[in-house]
Amino acid sequence: MSGTSGTSTTQSEPWTILRLLQWTTEHLKKSGSPSPRLDAEVLLAEARGCQRIDLYAAFNEEPPESVKAIFRDSIKRRAAGEPVAYIVGKKEFFSLPFHVTSACLIPRGETEHVVIECLDRLKKYQRVEGAVAEPSVVRVVDVCTGSGCIAITIAKESRKFGANIAVTAIDLSPDALAIAAENVRRLEVSEIVSLAEGDLLASLPDQSVDFIVSNPPYVSEAELLQLERGVRDYEPKMALVSGPTGLEIVERLIPQSADKLLPGGWLIFELSPMIAVRSLELLQKDTRWKYSGLVNDLAGKKRVAIAQRAS
Ligand SMILES: C[S@@+](CC[C@H](N)C(=O)[O-])C[C@H]1O[C@@H](n2cnc3c(N)ncnc32)[C@H](O)[C@@H]1O
Image 1 (cartoon, rainbow, N blue to C red):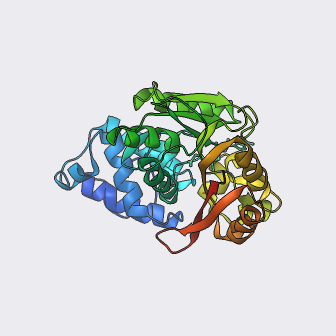
Image 2 (cartoon, rainbow, N blue to C red; image 1 turned 60 degrees about the horizontal axis):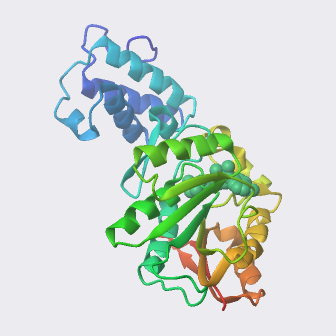
Image 3 (cartoon, helix red, strand yellow; image 1 turned 45 degrees about the horizontal axis):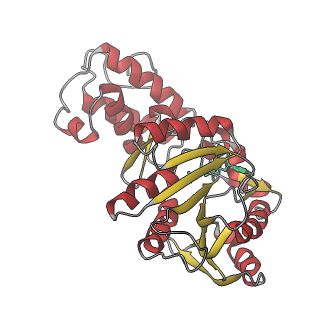
């Protein structure tokens, strides 16, 4: 590719879309990308301002120099290990486009399970106690919100079945909250989702919330070193690492949630298989939970803990 080295093809041959994709796929493969062809297609489509599928109908076209220059720059960043989502500034979650920067975690497919488990319960939720006059607003808190992907998706999906909810999205990082604010604006949920800076649930009154959802940091210091380069070097450490054991945030989240939830309210949070058993034990030994269990992800790994507050 023009401006790079290592291609054996002659310079007179035009840099068509197909040739750009073939050359870049090889280059990214050598740089260690686990998905070189996909990366090349996403980055070229972004540079060209089109959908990936449109590339297939334009294989023989040669893009203008302006497009090739943008593409070259993105390929350099990707080859250095930067995740594609940060390069293009967006990531799809639950079929919604989320703006992302290196200030927030890139939303993951596994986290959609937290949303699904919450929506399933929201659909049939009725306050068992709490003496709140009807119609009551169901209060949902997404703690450790990052890009806001969980809070915003629950807000948008719950509209579809007419739930009357208010979502508070909390994060300790002001930079992450700025990204969440941008997503709240772009995805048009500002009348449902409000943002708050804080350390876990400390700022909430006791027994004031119906649902607490979270994807908290749950990686241990040792596990961080084993993660792939793109995650370890580019995603915020405070979004990933909980402490030496990986359980530190969950150990605080579980009792705080029992304080803040209304009777019959639900706690739903993501975890890793490494801390799943220990997290379940923490829930089971606290008598304020009347139910607790674990849900597997699509790969069959323990991924979500669910608990219901006793009356
Ligand atoms: C694993 S990321 C999850 C982001 C987003 N919910 C998602 O699923 O993509 C964890 C988030 O927790 C935030 N965080 C870390 N410690 C926190 C704390 N003590 N209180 C509140 N937020 C915290 C980080 O800034 C980060 O945005």
